[in-house]
Figure (tube, rainbow, N blue to C red):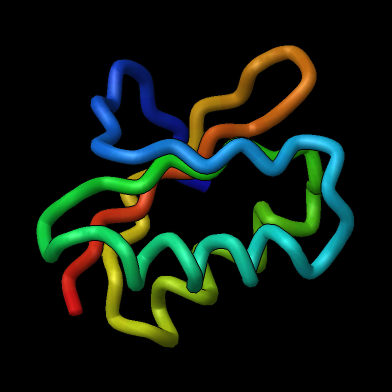
Length: 82
């Protein structure tokens, strides 16, 4: 797992307390709204996202930048490439 600090996101989606599969549905929805090269920050407390989001990036051709772990949730950073 790639942990990062101080990544500046262009757009943030807060889905803390939302159940699976919202992390992937929201990720897909938000990626359609941003421009190539922009970074999306997804905030979630769902630990299944630790595997799901990097796999989604690999499958879709987008860049998984990394994760920042806060006390109660994770922040995932994804750069739109396609």
